[in-house]
Amino acid sequence: MKRFVPVLSGIACLLILTALGSAQKKQTFTGVITDSMCPTGDHSHMKMGPNDAECTKACIQEHGAQYVLYDGKSAYTLSDQQTPEKFAARRVTVVGTLNAKTSTIQVESITAAK
Image (tube, rainbow, N blue to C red):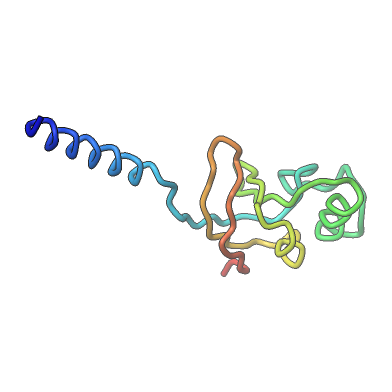
């Protein structure tokens, strides 16, 4: 029985280290705040406002779209759906954790890109 205790302890430590290693890491993303109806930021076909920012806001408010970050390749849904409004159609830096399965960023902060 005494021989199994170190083995079990070693297995427990390995499982804990594996879990910690697979924990999602905070990342920095840069892109344009747009909406899920126009995820590439091209609002020319929508005509929901006089500019891209107003079109983005209209898609959110009137059509139930969600704010997303478009990085030039992919659109990521943002967990925070209030802060992005003031950055609509602007280039921003988002700090957060990406859930690759759902393409959602758990937002920690959003700031104007430099």
